[in-house]
Amino acid sequence: MTTPVHIEVRDVNKSFGTTPVLREVSVDVASGSLTALLGPSGGGKSTLLRVIAGLEHPDTGTVRISGVDATRLAPQRRNVGFVFQHYAAFKHMTVFRNVAFGLEIRKRPKNEIRERVMELLELVHLERMADRYPSQLSGGQRQRMALARALAVEPEVLLLDEPFGALDAQVRKELRTWLRRLHDEVHVTTVFVTHDQEEAIEVADTVVVLADGAVEQVGSPADVYDNPANPFVMRFLGPVTEIGGNLVRPHDIEITAEPRPGSSQATVARVVRLGFEVRVELLIDDREAWVQVTRGVAEQLALNPGDTVNVRPAHRASRSLPPH
Amino acid sequence: MAKYGLRTIAVVYLFFLLVLPVGLIIWRTFGDGLAPFVEALTSPSALHAFRVTLVVALWAVVANTVFGVGAAILLVRHEFPGKRLLGAFIDLPMAVSPVVVGLALTLLYGRFSPVGGLLESWGLQIIFSTPGMVLATVFVALPLVVRSVVPVLEELGDEQEQAAHTLGASRFQTFLRITLPGIRSALAYGVVLCLARSLGEYGAVAVVSGRLVDQTQTLTLFVEERFQNFDQPAAFAAATALALLAVVALLLTRLLRPKD
Image (cartoon, rainbow over all chains, first blue to last red; front, top):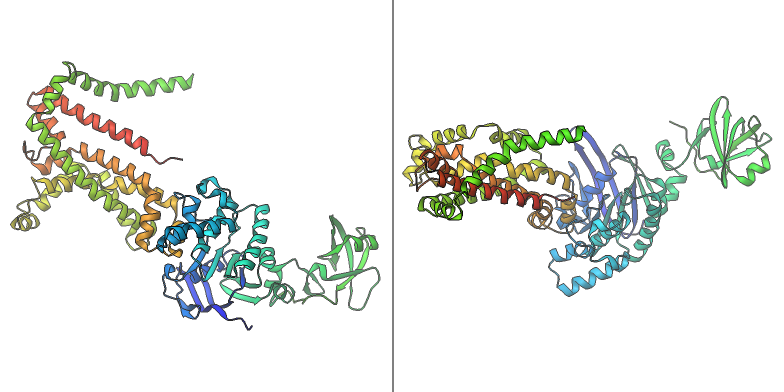
């Protein structure tokens, strides 16, 4: 990678009591990138983000931001913007005052504050909500306010902890797309935590997969999806099924009526139509597997429960892995 | 039917327990018009008792507010060994009789104890004087601010404070701009409760004050002393004044009680 490293996490360990939460974690975040920390809950991703923000201190290891050792620096001196899952809106302040908070702390002139806040409120489409209180906003609006508040101080780094986790599915999708576009406009180095692999793949340009407090894999979304480092990453990033003793993505399997080299015989157990996609459930030597095909393929094969078919991983198949 | 039955019982119970006695005092106070009431309360002794009560109560409220907010933040936001013990100590005044508190303070700070003797040699008299009365009042009203603030502080959570930190606010700025506004109504509620308790304190203050008329006599002590000396008009007038103060405090707590 030729882009300079902006956040450098090295050998970070962190335990809560006797429970290790981060184990020898090292991550580089490229300048201007949009990086997702992806993993199951309890995997340590939020803790890692809080360590970068200075809201938690690592037991050992270092954090460097823009080349400066920030490991022992208080959060207020790191110049990071942090967005919380539950917004952390200042309830007793209007939207305007919320966004102005960091600028008021920095004692900027009144005119400058007003100008900057209104500019940001426009950016997050809340310009008409300036005089409202957070309790009068919807969840999505509150989160956009929190984002504007974090951006107001022109942070070097923007950190988002499950920013859309508390929102309903519809709003979540909208905000995702919006975050991506915002990042393309603002270009601030951004790290966000999510347990939703679809969100990570859709929004981020780099995905860091964390499980049990350790980094499992780092790569582009396509990379971690198509070339998973291990069965855990493969399972976590998308659907998998097992044929011929290997883990395969169900859309990377060819079904044919006649046997072909490398194929194995299977019995159709069930055919489920999910709109465009058809899910074919199979029994291969009494083991369950499933294949995802398009409607066209399913109609061409005229699949019915009880039919015998032949399956094999497609040539274009992404990597298949032994399941353990 | 059961609904009305319960209501009736509750109303009758409160009537005999609360409304009737307080009502009687007020009736006896104003039985002969307003003039005797004003006269009884403007006597030099009564005015002095008012002043002593106010001075003691204000100092106690100030001390308990500062300590209360500090202790609440310590209990909710920090982990440290002995935290549960601190919590238990703060609740102690609820369980200990004020008379015991008074006696204990007298034992420690009295003229014939090492501590009290030492302080006295520096010219600081605790027992039979204002500092002792403030101490006693602080003690009995100790948990009120802490216990009002703790649940609100817990509910508030620390995310807003953390957000303020990441936006560049120092600990003190965060306390002033985020924490304090967040606990404002709970704190006001606790302060008024503490004030009401301080104004009405009798037992502990009775022991440490020595009940010196025109010197360490508070309003509650004044009521008792006048009553013992068969000066019923003065006793009733002062009692009514205390009750009115309590009612005002009660109304204030109603107004200040945290909304939603």
